[in-house]
Length: 38
Image (cartoon, rainbow, N blue to C red; front, side, top):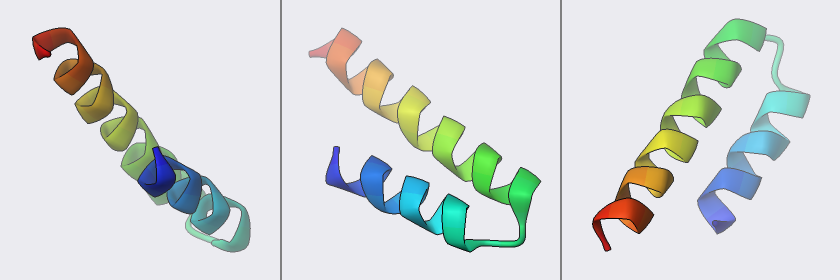
């Protein structure tokens, strides 16, 4: 969760808009898969 918040912070500070979105969405997908797997 903290890692996702850090990525959001990075996203707002970064000029690499699309790259930041892909990093954040990847982290969110990994977190959801961990929750679903248990």
